[in-house]
Image 1 (cartoon, rainbow, N blue to C red):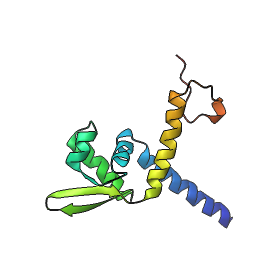
Image 2 (tube, rainbow, N blue to C red):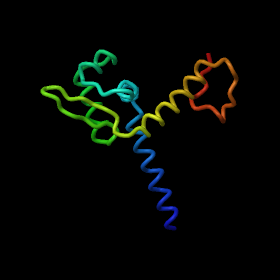
Image 3 (spheres, one colour):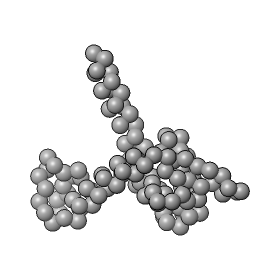
Length: 118
């Protein structure tokens, strides 16, 4: 029974992380700060969204522990708190890109993204 509880905790934690990552803007933010920290102005130059929306997403990523921040004068710089989040995002996004760009037939049971009939 204890092993099941441990497994349940893993699934609950994974689901909570996926919920935080389940917004395209947040994935773009993670991608943008993957190599180097950035402030809000720099992020807004890279990601098409409003300043209030950006701040809301940054706060969510910060509260969840995905991002950390530091203040320099009036600027706040954001960076990845965990490299493992970047590895996870890269792996999933790379596989999805392969499926979307590939002309190859992928079995429906192996697909990460739903097959869209055109």
